[in-house]
Structure formats: structure tokens, C-alpha cells
Image 1 (cartoon, rainbow, N blue to C red):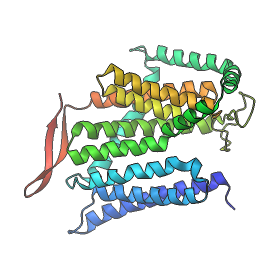
Image 2 (cartoon, helix red, strand yellow; image 1 turned 90 degrees about the horizontal axis):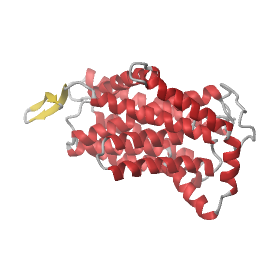
Image 3 (cartoon, helix red, strand yellow; image 1 turned 90 degrees about the vertical axis):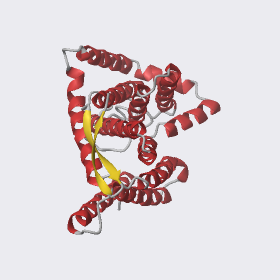
Image 4 (cartoon, rainbow, N blue to C red; image 1 turned 135 degrees about the vertical axis):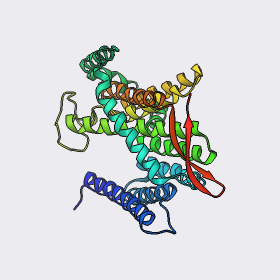
Length: 333
């Protein structure tokens, strides 16, 4: 008999397995047949199909009210598939390979960036550690103050903030931007979608690892701010840091870097900050969880945008011609 957490893990594993199976089939068809080529849009459709089926099953077994994010994630991916389908000249293997290479390089940069001495990054890291430690000292006081000021209006606003900060919705949004950029032939929006997705993957993955390694109890599960159960993999003991905050600030960091408008930059970071407040208001996280999550998300966003900005001036890109397809040398200045 599955527990709720075990059932969720099984669903996720099934989604990943189905997506990988679809990708392998695409590659085999391209390699073993002359009439069928591996296409990125088809693999994208495999992923959407797997996630949609998983979301429907999950929602059917849980209260609909609690899993609106899963439905929105699938809804955002559907037009992304339609957009991607319009770009028949996009190489599936090329896109996946380039994305994995970028993620590998960005992961390495993420691991060493906080400790770099030559550009003073280690001082920023020390500042973040100090901020998290100071916040940790006042975690219980902050929680008490926030919970004492709860009301119907703030409750509704916080619910909206929790939904807006859901990592699944952010991933769906990045896929939508990426697919729309491909359909419109816009390298700028395609790359923006890539940066959004890569920053979110790094933020979510690193947050998940820290969560499970520390096993901190959520404030709605324990009254002790120091209740840590490392590698316990227990429900409600994955509080530190906040993935909603990390995902929101990663997204804000990327979008702010692609905008020259001070007003828009302010809007992006204000929205991410409100998500952090929503996590406190609904008693899902301690304040120090949110502070570290925000810092981690900002770091991931900056690593990704920095990597793209300092990338090669010249690159090979798939190109469609009247009588076939090929590669074009694309310059960036």
C-alpha cells in the first residue's frame, strides 16, 4: 500500500520513464529508418503527454483545490507543443545535446561561483550565510508575528502567491516562452526560454538536494525551528530552503537580466518577494528557509544569464533551406 509521498514519487518516476522512453524511440527511428527523423517537437509532445497523464491521475486521487498547479503546468505546455511543432527545422538531438551541455557547464559554474576569491564572490557568500544565520535566530519570533496578523484578505492573497510561485508553473511558463520563440523565429525569446528553464532546473535541483540533506521540519509540522532530520525523506521535513522562493527568484533574475526597464525589474523582484511572504503567511516555511531560497534562486539566475552572455560569439544553428536542411554559422555581438 503506497503512502501519499510514495505514490507521488511513483507517479513522477513513471513520468520520467515515459518521457525517456519516448526520447529513445525518437532517436532509434531517426537512426534505423530513412523515412523518419527524430524531431524535437515529437519528444516535447512525449513529455507533455506523460506529464498530462500523470497530472490527471494525481489530481483524480487528491482534492482538486490543492493541485491546480499541476493542471496549469499541463495547460501551459500544450500551446508550447503547438509552437514547437511549427518549427520543423529544429533538430531534436541537437537541441537536447546543446541544452545538456549548457546545463553541465552551468552546474559546474554554480558549484564554484560562491567561493571565487578573485571577484569577491566569497564575500557575498559570507553575507548570505550571515543573513540566513541571523534570520534563523529570529525564526520563531518572525513566525509568531506573521501568524498573528493573518486575515481573510491576506489569506486569499497568500494563496494566490503560493500558486504563482509554484515551480511546476514556472517550468511550464519557460516551455511556453521557448516554444513561442521557436515558432516566431525569435532567437531572443527562444534563448530567454532556455535561460528560464535552465535557471529553474538548477534552482529546483539544488534546492531539492539541500532539502533532503537537511530534513528540516516545516513550521506547520513542528514548533521547534531546529528540528532537523537529515536524509529522513519524510513528508513535511523538507523545509530548508524554500523551493517556491528559489524558483521565483531564479525566474525574476533571468527576466530582469533580459529587460532594460527599471519598472519591469522592480515588478519581477516584487512578485518573487511576495511569493516568499506567502510561504511565511501560510506557515509553510520559516523565514530563514525563504532567505536562503531567494539567494539560491538569484545565484542560479545570474549563473545562467552570465553563461549565455559570455558564450561563444559564433555558433552552429539548424537552418531550413528550400531543398532541405543544414547548419548555419550564427554570430552574436
